[in-house]
Image (cartoon, rainbow, N blue to C red; front, side, top):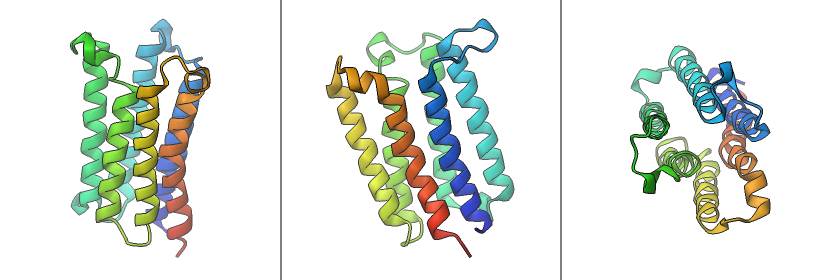
Length: 173
């Protein structure tokens, strides 16, 4: 697997595991509680992955897809922190974590499908569609026990798995 595949696969693995770790609901850094701990966890992982991408991804500084995902991550974290510090209106606060990441994931995967390599486009179109479907389900699920118990795992699957598959299948040279 070449450097591009390794970075893409690393994103897939870390995103899937990050959602899975949040699902375990055992996160509590320094007694800060779940919400703050989740933000610390997510921020550290995203900063490390972005730094690794800019360090080892060939021509990352000139790559529009890398730039787009960097902006998407920054936007998602900004929305999350605005909610964490009670700056968002209450009507938006409910949708500022899970829903935001699914929406931004759908946008990012669609952009990647258009701008990335043709061999990867079907994977990213599928990922964009799965994020949209899961986002719609999140709005419609209400008190659905299955969804409430598994929503974070489902997010890990629709965001991490396609990226991992692309990294492993399409960059083995």
